[in-house]
Image (cartoon, rainbow, N blue to C red; front, top):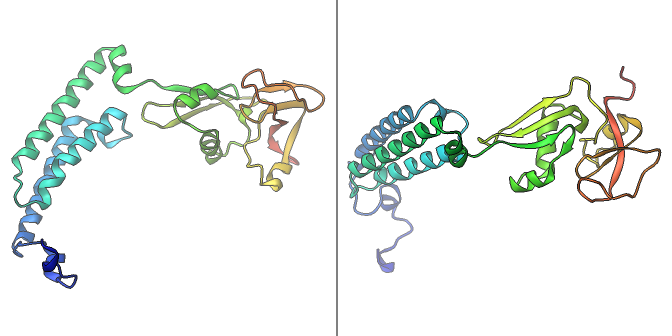
Length: 237
């Protein structure tokens, strides 16, 4: 479109587009219906996992499928056959990879990735968290969403290949780092302190000492410490 032909008040161009008859809207409906059926078929062929939490490989397949079928919906000069071919190629590749992944643990690890241990017995594994780009704030927020207020409650925290977090808790929680935000003084004051126990504010490493220490943490090397807390609040049994 030439600049002199451009009119901001051209309602027909805004609604339908350039040089397209109104009848094309009916074709759009038919194209959307066909593409919808194609996507449903491809999702069915790629398996039930595509309707659940996705791995990186499955997400890549889904994005490729969306890119393949998106253009023909609104482009009258584009046919549907190329979209069908691309979608079938994506499905075949995904099924081949899934087939070999189910037969080889090493191949599955390469294509889908491995789960990672983020917390071990109340201690955050900072190196592993850094590798997976998981911040302490994000991990602590996930724990708080489950009602966990003390890092000592956590026996294991896993980052699954799908990106989900899985937590296993101690039957008998130990003292640990408070997960209550530092600015929420009201809630932090209600947490019962563990006598003669201090934790590293960065990784949650627990030490037994009668007073706050300025030692370097044996795990992360930081010097920020706070009193360890127990699971129950002040006044609770």
